[in-house]
Length: 364
Ligand SMILES: Cc1cc2nc3c(=O)[nH]c(=O)nc-3n(C[C@H](O)[C@H](O)[C@H](O)COP(=O)(O)O)c2cc1C
Image (cartoon, rainbow, N blue to C red; front, top):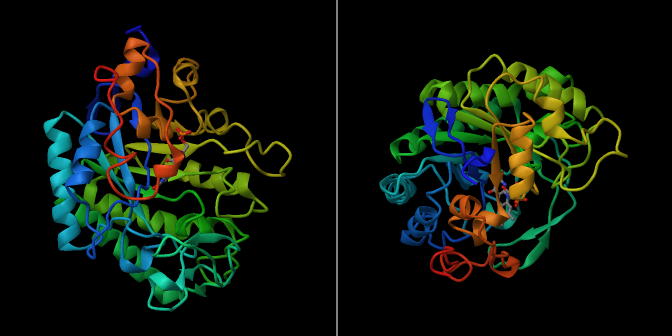
């Protein structure tokens, strides 16, 4: 069993990781304090999962403007840095590596989080969905306010500030969240970006902010400690763009110019074969184009994870839901041990239940 591809060491930027089983970023809404700072509970949760080759933190907002859900932690204030420092020290003591996922939700938010003002976005287009309000009730989204050109520089500066905070908090690197319909993804896709300035229109213009953010963050960390997450065929929080494939081909081609720690790609949540300009098999499409370390995610089990590495379509596999319910996932893979199913009811509710009480295989 130790010959499994998932359990072989791998180089990621400047790090030598013991295995290829990454923990996918997972929002868990447990920062239930006015500072939106990680707590001792977070340290316990992440330390339980330190056997991952790499832990990617839950999405952490880069500024108050970047928030869109209740009790998600930030990475911009002193209290948040102190909270995260406790987490990273504990994860490191257990032998783990941990990157911080930098997040701005853009229009996937409610006025309730912004003093009654609408959230911001590339264009004033309502995503037409419902979201959790601060009291965890569901509310419909509103039409966001389109960002002024001069405001975009301020957002890039917020990413740089958050990247500096992540460094101070003792993370091993940062992952730029450009997936799942949040702000950077909103800029990339023409259903949410109808701007007529330098940040809209052409494929190059729609990608401009993504590369400004990558440049800003890499200037602080070095490109070899920066990853980026993309969902080229994603339909979560966002409509299919008219030129998705060409848009993401352009982004991935340009990412080759950076020696990033990794590119983290998501397969579609549901088949997209019938949607024009989408990419049904993301890893297969991008492996030949991307020259760096490639991490793949979405719907993988142990067998599929080993297969995608063996057939050369990816270097690492990120596991989300299975890491929620199996804190010792790589050890279970090594032992061929049975897996615990995650309880969806406790994904986002807060508290210890369904968070730090999943047993390891040995204690089960
Ligand atoms: C509870 C939950 C929270 C999530 N939070 C995030 C997040 O903060 N950032 C992100 O990029 N993806 C997030 N995702 C998506 C996961 O990282 C992952 O892409 C998804 O669960 C599919 O992988 P899986 O099939 O291994 O679970 C979340 C998914 C779940 C189920």
